[in-house]
Amino acid sequence: MTAPPLLQTKSLTKRYGSVNVLSDVTMHARDGEIHALVGANGAGKSTLCKIISGLVPASGGTMKFDGNDYRPENKQSSESVGIQIVQQELNLIGTLSVAENLFLTRLPNRGGVLRGRDLHHQARAVLDRFGLTAIETHTAVESLGVGHQQMVEIATALARDCRLLILDEPTAALTGRESQQLFEHLRRLRDEGVGIIYISHRLDEVASLSDRITILRDGRFVETRDTASMTTDEMIALMSGEEAAGQIAEHQTYRRDEIAMRVRQITSGFVNDVSFDVRRGERFGITGLIGSGRTELLRAIFGADVATAGEVELTDVKDGQLFSHPADAVAAGLAMVTEDRKQNGLLLSQSIITNTTLCSLRPQFSRGGLLRIGDEERIASSMVTNLETHCEHIDQSVGTLSGGNQQKIAIAKWLVHDAEVFLFDEPTRGIDVAARRRIYRLIESLAKNDKACVIVSSDLEELLETCDAIAVMCDGKMVETFQRDKWSREKIMQASFSGYVS
Image 1: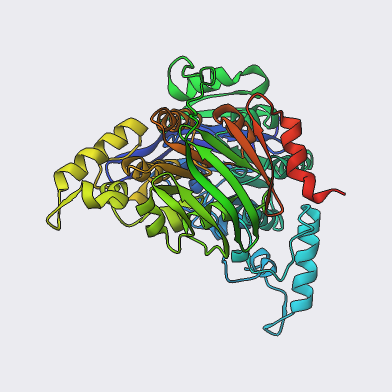
Image 2 (image 1 turned 60 degrees about the vertical axis):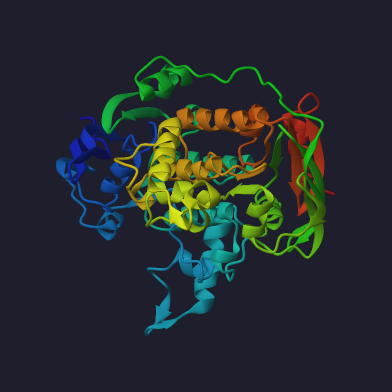
């Protein structure tokens, strides 16, 4: 007899009040396969996986795991049968060490006393097995970059008994090299018989990594097919319910001769003596390996971190300066979409209206010290429509939105603000393929209107598609800048590794 699927869901439904997030979803996942789960933001992918892993209860429907009835009461009960989940948003404790996070619920002890040497020995073995040899077990997690934190969280899941591993956008903060390292481990786990449910908006990853694909749309099951029988255009068509469209047109540059921002010899912590110019209408990409200093550079320019040397000169502020606070940078004409939207980009408990207009209250939305509520509502509604943000209403708190829709709000607040230079740090992280195209078009429209855009991204393909020039950071320095007609993937990658080879 054929063995039953490792996981079966039948008619799963999830309701929040009167809103159906999932409706009658039936699917199954096998052991020894990588099963991709794809769909646009709000399709229900993360909700389905939270139900499977016991993080939220289903409103209806049934599940079986390994042939037995399965209804987890919480995350611990799902882990007890071997289901591990790594969510899109990191779930580590920043003040604890890497080793303590890896074994948080099962710290080695004797008589209630922590056996520190054993803890760090076991943690070292886990990190080495996962290829994270450069991460020290005593390091506080909060001191790591987002990409390394993501790798630690995945390693934490694999350090436990695991029969079904659920990964929600695991490569959103990883470089190409780190992603390939992860894929090698996933293929090894698959060959060892572990079942893997893999959520990603990066359809090239899905096509090359997965064995089967399940499509969700608007909380409903659409289709499950072998990956080999489906093209990316077909995936997009099934996700959207219409023929694939919206392919990016041939790149057009709007770059002018006038310089919008000069950065000279910026030094801040890990960033060392970085200089570059960005012109009006230019889309200037910055790439590099995790830890190369990309995010730290933007934060120093924006005044979020204190720069110890250098200067920033803007068109309307001729005298070079260092911004001591983001408010000064905003007043001078800078805007920044941060990498970590929850910690640094949004007020999660506040409404879409509040977050959208937050950076532009004066003078756009106030008169005589009083807020012009009607104007706020109109612009927030307009941004929701333009970005196709999925929400119930514009009074809804941003914390209740999906990760991708939160990112749209984080970008919207700066689109409302009339800045001259936009700093984008991972602008499409966690955003589905259709929304990603809309963000690209929005950035293009900024360039067309003479705005300068600096775009940091771990996704080299994203920069190759959208930018006029790409600069490479390595070991805290900007080592080379490539123009569109001169670059190649090989040259960019060589520059990215240049500081790590003799």
